[in-house]
Image 1 (cartoon, helix red, strand yellow):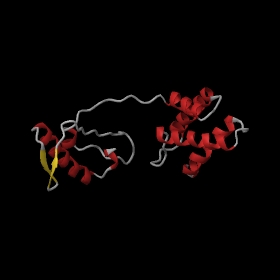
Image 2 (cartoon, helix red, strand yellow):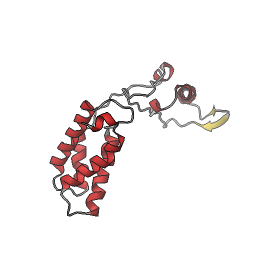
Image 3 (cartoon, one colour):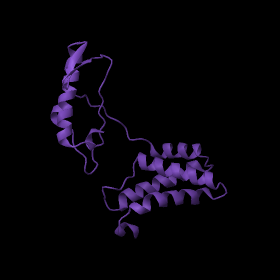
Image 4 (cartoon, rainbow, N blue to C red):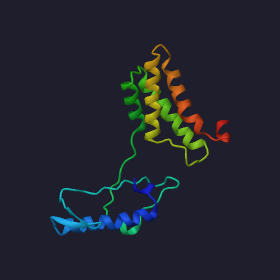
Length: 167
């Protein structure tokens, strides 16, 4: 994710990417990269992932943007992903629990304050569902809804600021 890198570093990377692309376009078998001759493969590709809209993230500079071809991506179906993950963790009520979880995440995103450390994305969702699976394996006799609520609470509550705890 290039937008996590400082702009000064990205500018240096842009020059390095340009040297690689120029060598590929010229069909060179070897080229000078940072003072060393290295082999050049026509099969190699450079891909940059970006998550626009996140607070504190750097935009891709124009000189690097000009070297890349944009590709649009769709937002993942979090409900389906949560359902499959819960089913894989052994939850019998995976469909209804997934819907409740994604609804809760949506409400948190809408109603809680906007904080840089709040994360309602796939990475956080996966961590919560993995924790729920571990809790279920530790005590399979517990109600599945309680297990999931405990994982949601334990993974999210410590991150909330005091004003958001009231909600």
